[in-house]
Length: 312
Image (tube, rainbow, N blue to C red):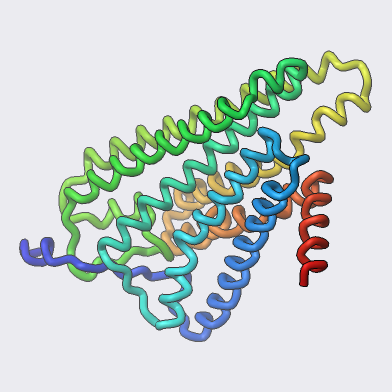
């Protein structure tokens, strides 16, 4: 490959989920529906929490942040996909691809961090109920969220700065429906050893530490619940963790499913289909998990909708 073919790259080609022209209208309709449901569902959660003073607590503060991140997360991927389907184009610019890689990493890891912080919040609420308001004060809650943003901002930026040093061949095809870091690195014409080392180290640290924090929090929660003699007391205490456990299971379950799918099948097409679960389906289901399983959120949503209908 000539050097000129390395330096003049201005765009990538996203192969998408299917090359069948007859499936494109169906894919467009399905993903548009899922995108709108995700945005509206999470937006309602945010509005319900901010408008109801009863929900101005640490747990719902973290939940509103999670809903905001889910909106941003899916907006990083799906709109570009819909535009490409509508325009019958698979092109994404080089800068657009790097931007998508950056924000995909930013919001996906932020999701993970917030789930970890929420697990810590439940640990304090159940294991140290008398000191909950003192420990989980507004200053600490804001500091925890800011620390999460600060950490992943620089980790994502490091990946992008390293990718800027790579060269790619003209007409490079990405066997995915969005620019994902590992897929893009595979297509580089230059040496990616440092990029891969940083990616694996960051993935291990970002994956292991949050999951360890979640498992530690719930081990302490279970240990504390075992000391409660009343069955009703155990259920009432643990019921506050139900929605969070569902979100954690969904997030890590779909992520693990994508990893196993890519490791077992070695098929980029099947891996990209599996990726739909954690990039689109998970953000869409989170509002339903937290609204259907939570009486406080359901009540706040009902009051929000009633106020909105009465003002019309």
